[in-house]
Image 1 (cartoon, rainbow, N blue to C red):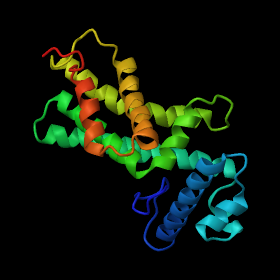
Image 2 (image 1 turned 180 degrees about the vertical axis):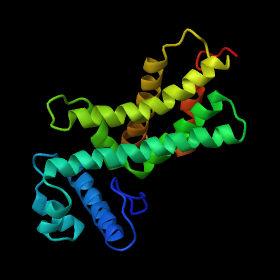
Image 3 (image 1 turned 90 degrees about the horizontal axis):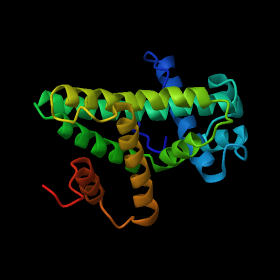
Image 4 (image 1 turned 90 degrees about the vertical axis):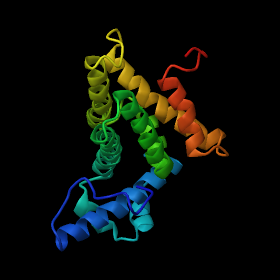
Length: 216
């Protein structure tokens, strides 16, 4: 991904060879996501990915059977990082005794932080969600489901605790919250870059808490 501090790759390894392989995969992820975001999947070649990553072309094929497999693993890796950040935000709120609304608010902020850190991946991920003829479509649906499931879990807990209305459609609301963060963050970066992350978070927090109508 775009940041060298993005964490471990999808396939973890032990110290030594496994650690070197994870580092190589990380370089390939970073190179692939940048190139594909810039010029599209079809126009990006393995040679370009290898050159951008600073490795030999054979290294790409040692780690991934094809460019398609590399991209599929990139999606798993990136959305996995997003899912982990959402889960961590919810767990931190739970640990300090916060409400489920506070947990959702913390997850919104965690999502914004992720997108601010990995804008090229986020742009790529959102674009791929609208395509239905890709080889990795089933993988994309699985990893998307994992991210949304974290939000669903918090929503269900909120309903069970009486913090949220029992009338809400949990799956649809969870998908809407994730989508809101993704689209709002991309709009922020593309058209309102002068705003701070705190500004954007505050605006989305008001939406979450039902304060846009002016009623208390």
